[in-house]
Image 1 (cartoon, helix red, strand yellow):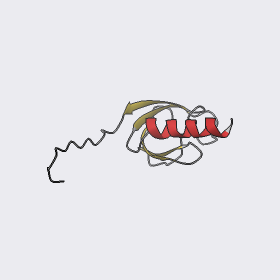
Image 2 (cartoon, rainbow, N blue to C red):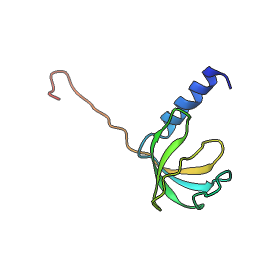
Image 3 (spheres, rainbow, N blue to C red):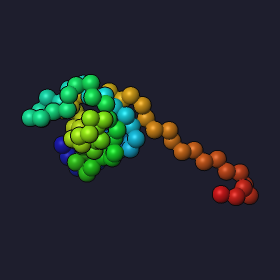
Length: 90
């Protein structure tokens, strides 16, 4: 994967899995001590390697690897929309 592809993949992860996104794990095949399938958790962020930094509801904090681990999004955080009119105080 070249640098441009890597940057695109990293930005995709940050755009689609913002902090607060809730996910359900389907499978974590390559980890010797995987999170059990069906476990839910919250995305805390995306690191520079493109891994989803997780806080699992069972207390663990093992990261998800998009493209390796299987998971589904349960919910995404609401975006903060600020609508201001000309002259309106902040």
